[in-house]
Amino acid sequence: MAIEKKFIRKALNDLEISNFLNKELERAGVSTIEIQKTPIATRITITVRRPGLVVGKKGKTIKDLCDELTRRFGMENPQIEVVEVANPSLDAKLMAERVGKSIEMRPRAKAAMRIALREIMEAGAIGAEIRVAGKIVGKGGKAKTFKVKAGYIKKSGDMMNSVNKGTYIARLKAGCVGITVKIVPPGTVFADQYHAPDVVAPAVVEAEAELPPEAPAEEAAVEQKMEEIKAAEVGETKEADAETKKKTASRPKKKKVEKNGDSEKTSA
Figure 1 (cartoon, helix red, strand yellow):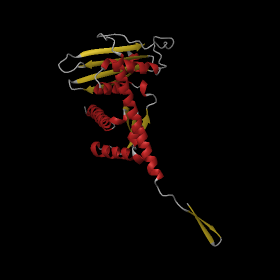
Figure 2 (cartoon, rainbow, N blue to C red):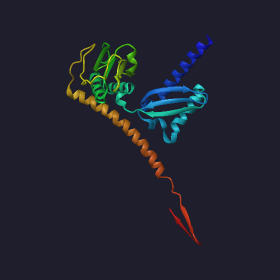
Figure 3 (cartoon, helix red, strand yellow):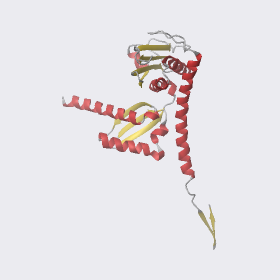
């Protein structure tokens, strides 16, 4: 039983490390965290939307994270590698987080789901499904489940490994709301197909509850909120880069001294 306990203890320790990093780097938009232990060091690969917030000024944030991992979890020589997400619109976890934050700011779940689904399909996904469950209507209302989907997506079997799945929990006054997003990335070929299916137009299909058409003004307001979230993310990254450039420009320039016989020339 000693070997089994060792594997269980290692898995629990990795889970605690992942939860700690997700909490510390929440603003950076964490997608995945991979922990690989080697005889020399422990490599941690973090895939994020905004790598600038993880690196910090002159690598200070990464250094503080390594020191905290060593102090709290007893990790020997941790090395953190930061990778930027190539296309956030095709990342299920990031899209679930975006829908959840939109619902927290403005509880219009159906409009946020439609906007996110359209963005995913326009990014080139073969299929997508968004499911929101919880007390969305407000305090005192019953919990409901809304689901929208488009394109071609698998529901069961080993072929589900090709489907990118992400979850997020939105915390409202009435209670928690769970968001689940499933995306089939472009270029995926399933075992029961001879060729990749054609991309289907992002038509919203009613599933477990009726989704009545929303007012255009209401959907436009939700879309504006989601654009504000994107603009805030880009603004924070530009602000960090501008501050780094400002510090670099404020450094005193070195003077060059040129000797020409007995005379000396000083140039800035």
